[in-house]
Amino acid sequence: MKIVCTKDYQDLSRKAAMLLSAQIIMKPNAVLGLATGSTPIGLYAHLVEWYQRGDLDFSEVTTINLDEYRGLPRDHAQSYHHYMYTRLFHHINIHPDHIHIPDGAEPDPLRACAAYDVMIQRVGGIDLQLLGIGLDGHIGFNEPGTAFELGTHCVDLTESTLAANQRFFASREEMPKQAYTMGVKTIMQAKKVLMVASGKEKAEIVKKAFFGRVTPQVPASILQMHPDFTLMGDQEALQRIL
Ligand code: GLP
Image 1 (cartoon, protein in one colour):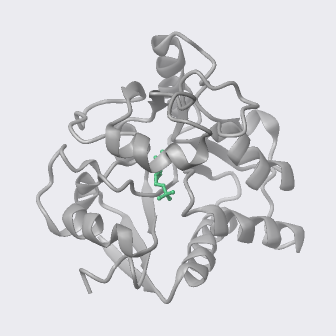
Image 2 (image 1 turned 180 degrees about the horizontal axis):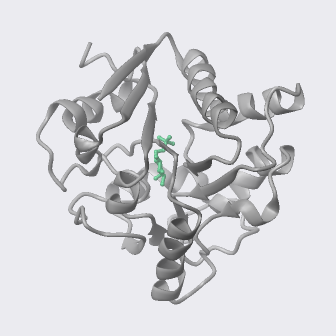
């Protein structure tokens, strides 16, 4: 595990975007695993800026998103589809057929999830997986207690995640209670993993996940076992481990 400490959120966003850019420069047909949440927003803004400046080419890149709320149509303002298109895909030259996000509008979990794992294998696996971390240690939407052996599957969101993500919805009732997510097994199969963490509210879980026991109760803790894992955090997020 490598740990990179950045000054602040701006510095984190720029350095993480540099790592994704390096991956694309070194392998123009790279398969990138992408994440949502508030942490990667600055990073995506840099990728758009560098593309517009002519420094990046996404024409051969494939992207595979981690997760999506079950039951949200693609055009819902809080769907991860909407997030990804408005923050990144609409602004770069990625081929529409190269974009993959679990289909939240597919009501059958088996259909939504099995096809996703087959697709990941078909594109040759993920070269670089970007991750954020939930306050309870979730990665993607793999909540505490999720078996490490699972591939893409349907999950019930925990109280902690519902509470953390409710700010994006008008009311708790409107918020989906389930999601489709890549499993921990799928994430661990990525060749490289980069986690971004920002802010003091992440400090405690960062310490627990990467300096505590490896346990399904803290899903991110399994990343300690990944052969090429980088944790990049700002000083606030890393304050308990520095
Ligand atoms: C959501 C996403 C995760 C993300 C997490 C943390 O639950 N499913 O992929 O890592 O939130 O988000 P934030 O970066 O907003 O703290």
